[in-house]
Length: 169
Image (cartoon, rainbow, N blue to C red; front, side, top):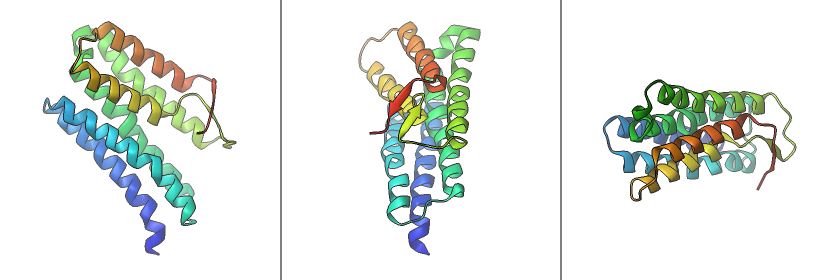
């Protein structure tokens, strides 16, 4: 029984790091916020593997993982980006901030209703969110123009909803 709960504990850890990221962003602790997202990505890498290893894969687990991913890799990077640079763009900043988790939600929903054949259609939200976390972290230490960060965020949003095929690694 306990073995079947372990993957969900990993998923809840992912969600916890995502929520902590949001809270740290709101408190101006942007470096810590980005690090929380990186930790969420590391944890997320293993929940599915552990579920398969323990023969504990379920539709419930798949849905729970998607909900956690939407927070950790959709909402949290968008909020971090808002605090870091998007808030300076007025209405366009709002649009970009909202676009990212919407694209991620669409990507997750499409994945959940499609049979997976070791090829992703569109960039996974975990990859897009982790990239934004790394880029935001780097921008805290170097001069990266907000326009470039915004373009990257829009491009990642597009890649999530695209039909471009990515082989699972």
